[in-house]
Length: 214
Image (cartoon, rainbow, N blue to C red):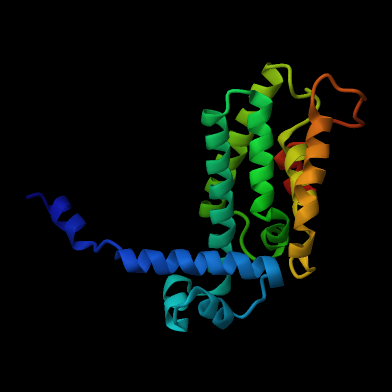
C-alpha cells in the first residue's frame, strides 16, 4: 500500500446525512433570499431547513460563504438546464426557449443584487460556475444562429439581462405574486429573438463581460 493511498483513506468522506443537511440549508437559503433578500437571519434559514444553528455554521462559517454557495448552486442548475436542452431537444430554438423558461424558475433576478454587493465576485468557485454557464448558453445560442432561427445581432449578455429583468422582481418585493406573468412575458421576448429580424437593433451585441463592466 502506497503512502498516497494511505493518506487518501485517512480523509473521511462526508456522511450521506451531512450532505443532505447541506443541501437542505442551501435550498432553504435560496428560497428565503428570494423572498426576503440576503440579510435574512441565518437562524431563520436553519429553522426552514430543519437543522440546528450549529449545522449551518459548521457548513458555512459566515453569511458570504452561504450566499456564494446559493449563487453557485443556481448557476449550476442553469448549466444543467442548458445541457439538458442541448441533448434532449432537437430543435435549436426550442432548446433555447426551454433554457430561458427554466432559468426564470430559478428566480435569478432575486439573486443578481447579491452577486453585485455581497461577496467576492472573483472567488474561484463563482468564476468556475459562471464560466461553465456562459459557455453552455453561448453554445445554445450559436446552435440557434447556425440553424437560422436566432437573429445574429444578439449576444449572451442580451439574453441573460432580459431573463433577469423579466423573470422576477427583486427579492422582498412580493415577487411570488407575479409568477403568472413571467412565462408569458418571456415568450414575447423570445419571439422577438427569432430570425429573420424585423428591425435593426441599436448598438452592438452585449456580452457577459460588458455586463460585468457596466
